[in-house]
Length: 409
Image (cartoon, rainbow, N blue to C red; front, side, top):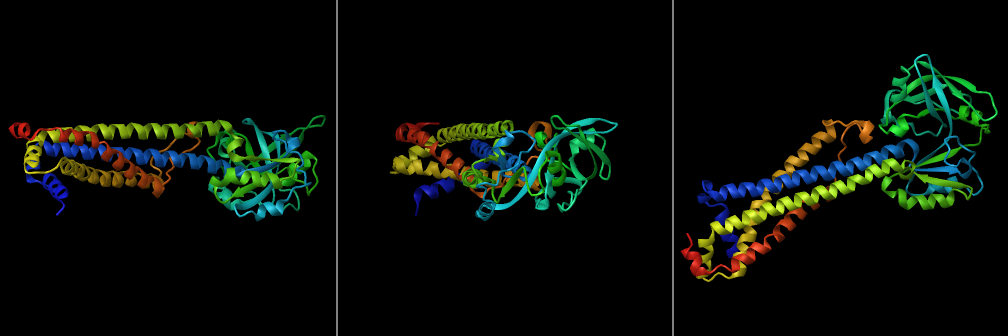
């Protein structure tokens, strides 16, 4: 028989605990553990989910990695992408690359009787990944591009549509200008409205036919201003960027989606700090509660400790009793915390109960990333740290004198 485990069970499930201080102390201990698990699960899952969702939204709109001409100098007006040394076929053959799409972008103005808006016209070709973009559509469709002729359909953001009072099937005039040239006017038809929740995208970009952008930029039909490269996993972006850069040609350069909008990445970096800070606070709270619970239980069980020592139990066995007792207190708390925390996260994941202001958070709904590794790590981490916190009070047990303990009342 395992004496420490047997005696721990006798204490934990004793009927004497129903109406005394032990029952209250056990409840407090379990509650603190459950709350620690719930808060930690929510913090990690929503924090990591927000980071992932924002990165994926940026990448799914403009490509995980974008190849541009060095002559463009970060301008929104595309320069001709140099074909010298540019090995697109080898880029497509990379195992992490899902697809590529060419584009030409040019800045302009949308104007009607209601308002005007500065825009970036992103000309897309027949290789445009409409399936990937579909998640952003709130009305209509994306322009059907063939590149055979000029396509006058455009997809605009919900922000631009609201500012200019536009709906699907409405017409809008765009004005484009180049240095030392008269303004160019184009009349487009709105066939789709999208929303990414990324302010820097929704405020500026509209999608249209690549031939219009080529004409405005003075490009030939075979020339492009850039290529968006989409990866299978955004976590591979740092690893694959150097490989793609080597195949892009020395007169071109690559830009990662995570570097395209540094202000957003600075915002995302805050999540790591907040996650770490909240988890540390919760661990401290759990440790303090568990230590206080154990100290009170030791005081309450002083007579029992004295009797055990008198009957020949070693200090190690008595410490083991209280370690087992702590685990019995914590395990139900861990189970309840996981059930409640995961239940809430599943509700949020599938029903989007909690909303956000995209102007401030770049997301309209709190996203959830349920990663089994982090779920297990939180539970095991809290269990381990709490168990270690038992070491100090267990050594206090060894200093209790059997004679004084038996006399203690």
